[in-house]
Length: 118
Image 1 (tube, rainbow, N blue to C red):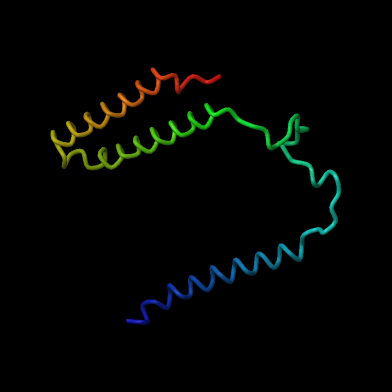
Image 2 (tube, one colour):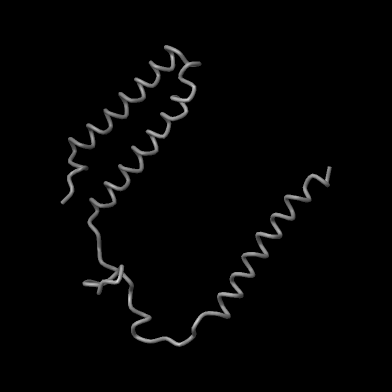
């Protein structure tokens, strides 16, 4: 029985060894001299216009959260589509109820103005 765990332990040891090896090599290779250009923020090769710690509107986070919520909810459709033949009419009705609730939430967020980007 313990022989079955030998490949797993070998894999864990190789993973830990690789992590330690790459940290040591990167520490040896890195440059320790700092200059003004090296300490500047990098934005795709363009000079930064503002401070990197600028504030974002709360609407940005609200829209991001709504996107994540609706995206995660639509992921539940994939398993349903895979076994649609086995679920038959019951599965179709359940998915229609799910979609109705999803659309209802979307319309509610739209009516409240949560999707207005300004």
